[in-house]
Image 1 (tube, rainbow, N blue to C red):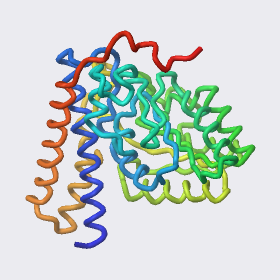
Image 2 (image 1 turned 45 degrees about the vertical axis):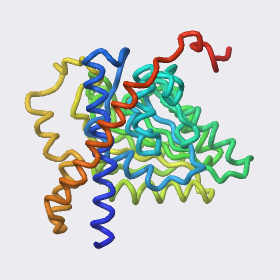
Image 3 (image 1 turned 60 degrees about the vertical axis):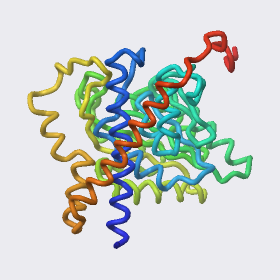
Image 4 (image 1 turned 30 degrees about the vertical axis):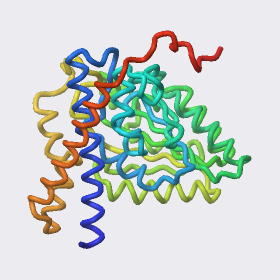
Length: 318
């Protein structure tokens, strides 16, 4: 098996795990087993699959509230993620964090954040600490195209550039800032160009191409680790679902989602595998294996005991 085929199959498996996990979360939310607001990353799987593949164990990843896929790609078990969203005691935060707030630092995943853009300044703090603790840690913070307009993100980028912190800023540009097109919210829709104003490098990538994202993010991370300072990567992608579960998506043009599905990352990598000569039954075997694993994880999570309400204030500080 060639290296290209092995890598593509590995990428397919990670992206399928994310996709099927998100679809299972959607089903559990619609059934009422999961409660509260839930945001899915269906269609945006290539970014986490590629970026997390080049992170080192000591690196710190900060995601948005659309971060289930990033957590899974970073190594957080599907069962523990599902249990957390289901309010089970076996969840990564004991059922206290839910969809928007869970964290798993033992896997290098330092949490989602329901405050838009809030992960950026926190990641800058982790990068600053790395300068003194000898860890050679790089911080990676992920946010959407709408979040890049937040003042906290501006301040984090300016601070990181001024002090050449080991941090990589990743903007997942799915073209929609919640329910409004990003093109209607900015004077310059090429968001990566903002990097130059801060004094750091910037680059726009096809965010549905795992090879391109792996190469660019790997270079940015190692550059940051060696003292070269921060970088902004803009990953162009599309979400195939609403901003949140229940979103009527009336803002979308007719046929937009159907068009996006022709180039979404899983369809794309399957085509690449066929072009590389991989038999259809080998691709189907990966799909079957992943589907079985996610179903098993969901069954185990659903069978776990509910979190004890008396522990709700544990680990809360003021």
